[in-house]
Length: 123
Image (cartoon, rainbow, N blue to C red):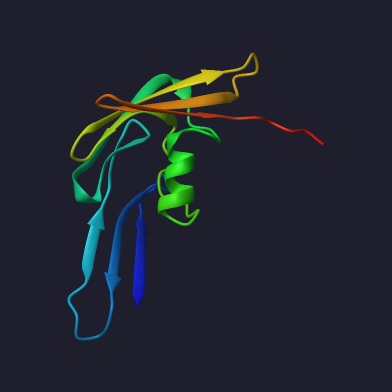
């Protein structure tokens, strides 16, 4: 495998090119950004963002990257994801504590609702 990552002047990922062997045509994946937020990703995925909530650990992108991208930072948007859509829209809501840390994340896709609650432990 040969993988090339291309970033814009704001260190935002705009293209990934993957070549499996010298005989294969490369696969290209593109990303589009607007106002500091990723708005499109490969596979037709689109994003909408909260304008009053910054991206932070525990938000939707945090878990998406942790589980879908093996922890690799793909989406360094400035705001927290409000919704994402591939074949259906997933709406995301957050509950925060008095310090602005996310204490829960709820996703809704149609009638399916899932909530993740967070517990912070300080040493």
